Image 1 (cartoon, rainbow, N blue to C red):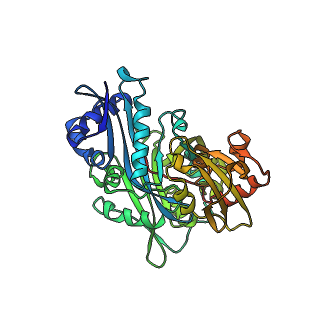
Image 2 (image 1 turned 180 degrees about the vertical axis):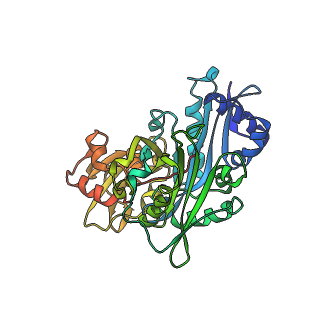
Image 3 (image 1 turned 90 degrees about the horizontal axis):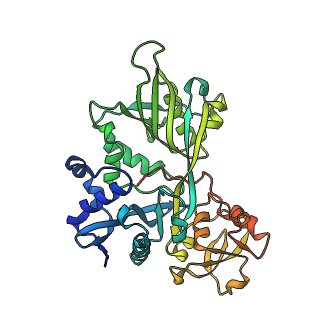
Amino acid sequence: MIEIRATAPDELRATGAVVATALMHAPHSDEDWDKYRASWEDSDSLSAWDGDRCVATMAAFRFDTLVPGEAWLPTAGVTRVGVLPTHRRQGLARRMMERLLAEARERGQVLASLRASEAVIYPRFGFGLAGDAAETVVVPADARPLSGAATGGSIRLLAHDEVLTTLPPIYARVARRPGVIARPAWMWKRYLEKATELGGDAEFVVVHTSADGIDDGFAHYKVEWKTENFVNASGRGEVYEVWGADAAVELALWDYLCSVDLVREWYCEERPVDEILRVAANDPRAYLLKVRWDEQWLRLLDVDAALTGRAYNDVDDSFSLAVTDSQFPANDGVWEISANGAKRAAVEPAVADLAADVREVSAAYLGGTPWSALAAAGRVDVRRADALAGADRLFQSSPAPFCGSGF
């Protein structure tokens, strides 16, 4: 009989080996384990044991997520899901996920969020695709000159020992897209590991300071030679993050990046789908979209707290929404939603304007997936046709949802 239990502190490394094996990596070396131990200890971990051998694991971090209206809601950041090949298709992942979500809800976490290695798995647990990201390439020579960049400010290159103390407070002020999470200290150390060391990879951080002396944005990037000689010498860069208090600040940071000597191309693995750079570039083809991918999978654990916790757009619309949740019956009910907010309604679900499973409500929640698109895919029961347009107007988010933090 396989036992599922909370992972004890001295069992965490065994769970790490399971995740590594399941995701086709080697288990941590002693050096790597010491480096990343803090993130493993900062999680609510479950593990499955076949005798004295760990065969499956799953965990959740305790984050806060920014939702429309700029409220921060407690979130279970589901992570490190893995089952050994010898123990697949025995229901272990389902048992652990149902328990993990139930315990998160009991702790008062309103949302659950994850990054999916396989996108077809998690809808069965109530997760909806709430936000995409873009993998892009930027060609600086074709992008310049940029329009709309902030003027009058300045940009400084941080020394390696300034990075960890400078960036977190800027991020806390300026990273305001729905879906952003509050990053713990271990995450900053992981992201900025190379930028805080001398030698090794050439990673750098620049900060934008406004004309009135306020640090209001930053960019984190890497540069390297693309060739091994000086024939057709060129460099390649990778942009990890660009955050600014507004579009003008972000464009000022991009203007800096597009002026870095020798870099002929910038690669970006994870950028917002509505990146303003594409519009601001002199040649729109300088901004190449390689892949649009599913960045944020979201699950409402407490539907009432989630719907009442976010704000809605100031439009003259309202509708009633019936929600069903097979795992948490307490989430079943009807909500009236308008610009004034959401509230439970004493209305029979059968007469609500729209009806949907918690998966679809979760997909629409951050304002990046239109209700009308979900309905067109046959995933929303529409009882009042004009309610769809109103729901879109109330929920829609600009800028688009984007997290930018992998876990």
